[in-house]
Image 1 (cartoon, helix red, strand yellow):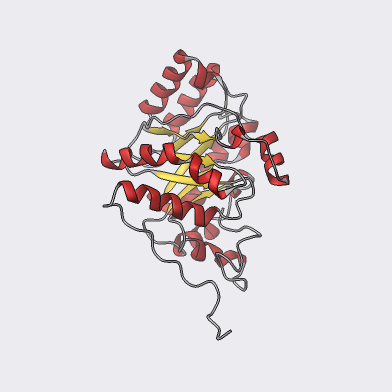
Image 2 (spheres, one colour):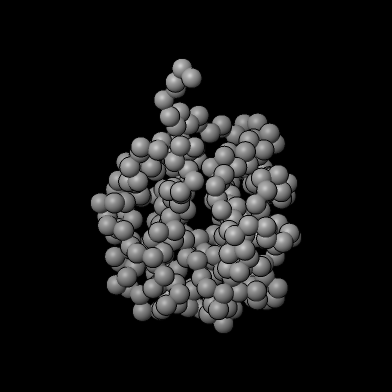
Length: 274
């Protein structure tokens, strides 16, 4: 996500066309979740424009189409996947293929997941997010999924909502998230050299920052091991997400001083005398 109604005038210039806002967003953060690809596969030319607006080190976590993951549950999707892979090809190795599965996709479906992952191009990075409680609470199911993912060089993406569900919702956005987001245990084990974390905080920036403290230590440890993690920071309304992501990076950098600083974003609006 690089367009949000609260960001123009704060993180991106108000006058900037929607199709150019990724460039401004990339001045704040060096990775993005591609949620729009879940609803429709973009034109290859559109994706090529994304690539042109970002530096070679910028990472894209691109969500597989809904028809692939939720409607057909990874079966009989050869045509849809060929179209999708061709569309995102301009991103090259910067793209991670993100398979976000519905809560009904459980341990009995792991064989289908394994067959699907083995058919993906070997040179494409891939990551899977599961939401069935069995993968988190049953040791045998956890091991089965970990083995399947490790066998195909696939990362397990944890979506950490534990902090969010510790306090009652206090805004319309939080009430909506309360009804839609999964309630699952926190998972901190990486399977590949590029772990990915999705973290959901709360309405309060202070609570969000306090809640990610376990992750700063985990991410610092991954960096010391030579891994290259990507972390996405969310709140119910995401109004402050870019600034919070930079604060998370600063907190990790305090633990790993050798970590490169993020670039300074360009001014959003021209300076004035008054």
